[in-house]
Length: 154
Image 1: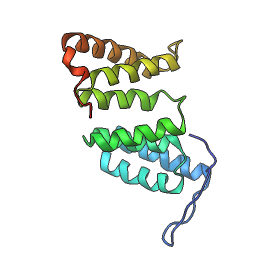
Image 2: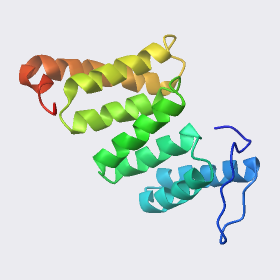
Image 3: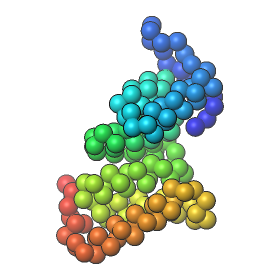
Image 4: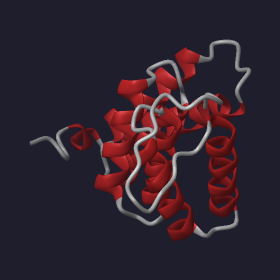
Protein backbone atom coordinates (compact mmCIF):
# COMPACT_ATOMS: atom_id res chain seq x y z
CA UNK A 1 0.00 0.00 0.00
CA UNK A 2 1.20 3.47 -0.73
CA UNK A 3 1.43 6.03 2.05
CA UNK A 4 -0.08 8.79 -0.05
CA UNK A 5 -3.71 8.66 -0.95
CA UNK A 6 -4.31 8.75 -4.68
CA UNK A 7 -7.81 10.13 -4.17
CA UNK A 8 -9.91 11.26 -1.30
CA UNK A 9 -13.62 10.93 -1.87
CA UNK A 10 -15.72 12.42 0.86
CA UNK A 11 -19.31 12.77 1.85
CA UNK A 12 -20.76 15.08 4.47
CA UNK A 13 -20.06 12.65 7.32
CA UNK A 14 -16.46 11.73 6.53
CA UNK A 15 -13.45 13.99 6.41
CA UNK A 16 -10.68 13.06 4.00
CA UNK A 17 -7.83 11.06 5.46
CA UNK A 18 -4.18 11.75 4.77
CA UNK A 19 -1.96 8.98 3.44
CA UNK A 20 -0.54 8.17 6.89
CA UNK A 21 -4.06 8.15 8.37
CA UNK A 22 -5.20 5.75 5.68
CA UNK A 23 -2.21 3.52 6.39
CA UNK A 24 -3.06 3.58 10.09
CA UNK A 25 -6.69 2.61 9.35
CA UNK A 26 -5.54 -0.15 6.97
CA UNK A 27 -3.30 -1.51 9.72
CA UNK A 28 -6.26 -1.43 12.09
CA UNK A 29 -8.34 -3.33 9.51
CA UNK A 30 -5.57 -5.90 9.06
CA UNK A 31 -5.36 -6.41 12.82
CA UNK A 32 -9.13 -6.86 13.05
CA UNK A 33 -8.90 -9.46 10.29
CA UNK A 34 -6.05 -11.25 12.07
CA UNK A 35 -8.18 -11.32 15.24
CA UNK A 36 -11.01 -13.01 13.33
CA UNK A 37 -13.22 -9.92 13.42
CA UNK A 38 -14.00 -10.19 9.71
CA UNK A 39 -17.17 -8.10 9.60
CA UNK A 40 -15.49 -5.20 11.43
CA UNK A 41 -12.48 -5.47 9.14
CA UNK A 42 -14.80 -5.54 6.13
CA UNK A 43 -16.56 -2.37 7.24
CA UNK A 44 -13.28 -0.55 7.73
CA UNK A 45 -11.89 -1.63 4.34
CA UNK A 46 -15.16 -0.69 2.62
CA UNK A 47 -14.69 2.81 3.98
CA UNK A 48 -11.07 2.95 2.85
CA UNK A 49 -11.91 1.59 -0.60
CA UNK A 50 -14.61 4.24 -0.97
CA UNK A 51 -11.98 6.90 -0.25
CA UNK A 52 -9.44 5.36 -2.64
CA UNK A 53 -10.96 2.87 -5.07
CA UNK A 54 -7.68 2.62 -7.00
CA UNK A 55 -5.69 1.14 -4.10
CA UNK A 56 -5.27 -2.56 -4.89
CA UNK A 57 -4.52 -3.45 -1.27
CA UNK A 58 -7.99 -2.32 -0.19
CA UNK A 59 -9.56 -4.48 -2.91
CA UNK A 60 -7.47 -7.47 -1.81
CA UNK A 61 -8.45 -6.89 1.82
CA UNK A 62 -12.13 -6.73 0.88
CA UNK A 63 -11.74 -9.98 -1.01
CA UNK A 64 -10.02 -11.60 1.97
CA UNK A 65 -12.84 -10.51 4.28
CA UNK A 66 -15.45 -11.95 1.93
CA UNK A 67 -13.42 -15.15 1.57
CA UNK A 68 -13.29 -15.50 5.35
CA UNK A 69 -17.05 -14.91 5.49
CA UNK A 70 -17.60 -17.52 2.73
CA UNK A 71 -18.98 -14.93 0.29
CA UNK A 72 -17.02 -16.54 -2.52
CA UNK A 73 -18.50 -14.68 -5.50
CA UNK A 74 -17.89 -11.30 -3.87
CA UNK A 75 -14.41 -12.38 -2.80
CA UNK A 76 -13.55 -13.36 -6.36
CA UNK A 77 -14.79 -10.04 -7.75
CA UNK A 78 -12.63 -8.07 -5.32
CA UNK A 79 -9.58 -10.21 -6.11
CA UNK A 80 -10.23 -9.67 -9.83
CA UNK A 81 -10.32 -5.90 -9.25
CA UNK A 82 -7.12 -6.01 -7.18
CA UNK A 83 -5.39 -7.93 -9.99
CA UNK A 84 -6.56 -5.34 -12.52
CA UNK A 85 -5.11 -2.58 -10.35
CA UNK A 86 -1.82 -4.33 -9.53
CA UNK A 87 -1.04 -7.45 -11.54
CA UNK A 88 2.41 -7.67 -9.93
CA UNK A 89 1.02 -8.52 -6.46
CA UNK A 90 0.83 -12.24 -5.85
CA UNK A 91 -1.56 -12.00 -2.89
CA UNK A 92 -4.84 -11.64 -4.84
CA UNK A 93 -3.77 -14.48 -7.16
CA UNK A 94 -3.23 -16.83 -4.22
CA UNK A 95 -6.49 -15.76 -2.60
CA UNK A 96 -8.45 -16.03 -5.84
CA UNK A 97 -6.94 -19.48 -6.28
CA UNK A 98 -8.36 -20.41 -2.88
CA UNK A 99 -11.78 -19.17 -4.00
CA UNK A 100 -11.49 -21.33 -7.13
CA UNK A 101 -10.54 -24.35 -5.02
CA UNK A 102 -13.55 -23.88 -2.76
CA UNK A 103 -15.76 -23.62 -5.83
CA UNK A 104 -14.28 -26.81 -7.28
CA UNK A 105 -12.55 -24.96 -10.15
CA UNK A 106 -9.32 -26.86 -9.70
CA UNK A 107 -7.64 -25.91 -12.99
CA UNK A 108 -8.36 -22.21 -12.50
CA UNK A 109 -6.99 -22.49 -8.97
CA UNK A 110 -3.82 -24.16 -10.22
CA UNK A 111 -3.37 -21.39 -12.82
CA UNK A 112 -3.67 -18.69 -10.16
CA UNK A 113 -1.27 -20.47 -7.80
CA UNK A 114 1.27 -21.04 -10.57
CA UNK A 115 0.98 -17.41 -11.65
CA UNK A 116 1.63 -16.31 -8.05
CA UNK A 117 4.71 -18.54 -7.92
CA UNK A 118 5.90 -17.01 -11.18
CA UNK A 119 5.65 -13.55 -9.63
CA UNK A 120 8.12 -14.64 -6.91
CA UNK A 121 10.54 -17.07 -8.60
CA UNK A 122 13.12 -16.63 -5.84
CA UNK A 123 10.57 -17.56 -3.18
CA UNK A 124 11.16 -14.37 -1.16
CA UNK A 125 7.51 -13.87 -0.21
CA UNK A 126 6.20 -16.43 2.32
CA UNK A 127 2.91 -16.45 0.44
CA UNK A 128 4.62 -17.94 -2.60
CA UNK A 129 5.50 -21.04 -0.56
CA UNK A 130 1.80 -21.41 0.21
CA UNK A 131 1.02 -20.94 -3.48
CA UNK A 132 3.53 -23.67 -4.40
CA UNK A 133 1.93 -26.07 -1.94
CA UNK A 134 -1.61 -25.25 -3.06
CA UNK A 135 -0.65 -25.50 -6.75
CA UNK A 136 0.70 -29.00 -6.19
CA UNK A 137 -2.43 -30.00 -4.27
CA UNK A 138 -4.70 -28.50 -6.93
CA UNK A 139 -2.89 -30.29 -9.72
CA UNK A 140 -2.99 -33.57 -7.80
CA UNK A 141 -6.70 -33.09 -7.25
CA UNK A 142 -7.21 -32.28 -10.94
CA UNK A 143 -5.43 -35.49 -11.96
CA UNK A 144 -7.70 -37.48 -9.64
CA UNK A 145 -10.85 -35.79 -10.99
CA UNK A 146 -10.51 -35.12 -14.73
CA UNK A 147 -14.12 -33.93 -14.99
CA UNK A 148 -13.37 -30.95 -12.71
CA UNK A 149 -12.11 -28.95 -15.67
CA UNK A 150 -15.62 -28.63 -17.03
CA UNK A 151 -17.10 -27.83 -13.60
CA UNK A 152 -18.00 -24.21 -13.22
CA UNK A 153 -17.82 -23.52 -16.97
CA UNK A 154 -20.71 -21.42 -18.16
